[in-house]
Amino acid sequence: MPHRPPIAFRRPRTGVPTGALSVLRACAAAACLAWTSGHGFAQEETVAFVGAEVLPIAAAPIPAGTVVVAGGKIVAVGPVATTPVPPEAKRIDCAGKVIMPGLVDTHSHVGGGWGGDASGPIQPDVRILDSINVRDAGFRKCVAGGLTTLNIMPGSGHLLSGQTVYAKLRKAATIDDILIRDAAGRPLGGMKMANGTNSQKDPPFPGTRSKSAALVRQKFLKAQEYRRKVAEAKGDPAKLPERDLEMEGLVDVLEGRVIVHHHAHRADDLMTVLRLRDEFGFKVVLHHASEAWKIADTLAKAGAACSVIVVDAPGGKIEAMDMSLATGAVLEKAGVPCAFHTDDGVTDSRLFLRTAALGVRAGMSRAKALEALTLAGARMLDLDGRVGSLEPGKDADLVILSGDPFSLRTKVLQTWVEGRKVFDRDDPEDRLFAVGGYGASRDQRFHGCCIDLRMAEGR
Image 1 (spheres, rainbow, N blue to C red):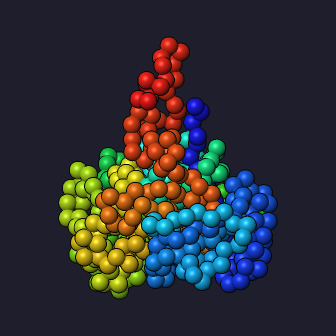
Image 2 (cartoon, rainbow, N blue to C red):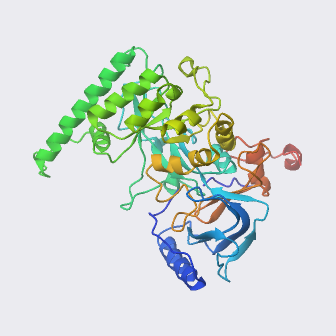
Image 3 (tube, rainbow, N blue to C red):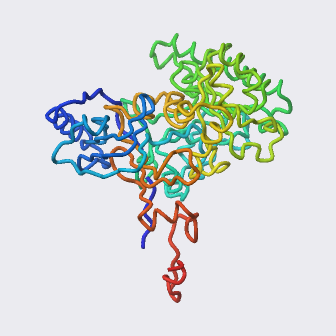
């Protein structure tokens, strides 16, 4: 059996009202037309998920609800009794199940991509999308865990290791198929930065925290000067400075077009990031934030959002030794925006739901823990107009669960991206990636000329 490749994005949402069947049909037809033009991942039919407990995230849970999707978009969400279903829709009975939005992972390393090399500590010209393998088995495991949107990052061994990419986990043949693009067709992503011990190495890398910050400041000062020269040239080719990919990447950061996703664990490192943010005016999300609980009120006053890892976070790293399962609860109480992430492969994407469950166990509210898996992360990627909640007009990304999201017994039964099913636990091939076994960590199937494949695969 040939390997079925993993699974990228479409255009910004437009509001779609709910109500009468005629409105639903009109919305579905319009969405379908827009969806199919120039796009190979079109939803082929209107689908209604009926009878599940629906967790919209942006609204109160619906004990027995209906979600209608068409043309890759959500067109209606509401109680079964009051939400019309178009007669042509394929009805899926979800009684006894739970439906929630597709999970948003703000920090992932799936796809085997590498960022900067050993030539220097700051490399904003490097793009992680140039080294992602979309056939990597990790993508199959992501959808088996209910993930639908990822921020795929280079590593943290540099002060700045390169440009991240925002990905939608559609079925894919090439990297272009998983890119989330803006209205002009440009791939969206952030800029990965780091401090602490990871980037402290022999020259040309810094050897101390102070030198790390100094190198970053110097590079941003150079970018400010480059931006000034470009502005003064007013488009005159004779006056423009020589094109510099590093500077272009940093100018995007300075102009706020790109969000900095900054690896930092210790409280003092988190504060250094905020000083740099205030000095140069860039937008930043603090990642890992193992000691955020120590300075929660300060982070709240600074308006600093935190993407937190609480499962397997220490990983042998001494600066994460004060990581706390209560970080989510402490940040919630202080009013700090908090999302969870996997750092996959640090935490397996198939276990993402348990991160929020542990947050609840340590005092986080159920509502904020669910939000930390979905809408909070979407906001940190500036994608909350498209994903993160079940609302009319947003992308039809959803997960069907066998039970409560925070129960250890709950399984991801199906994952849907933009109205199309990308994971089904009842499919033997998909199930393999959900539960593990021979072939679950490879992007090709076992084959041999002299071996009974049924025996080799344990059938």
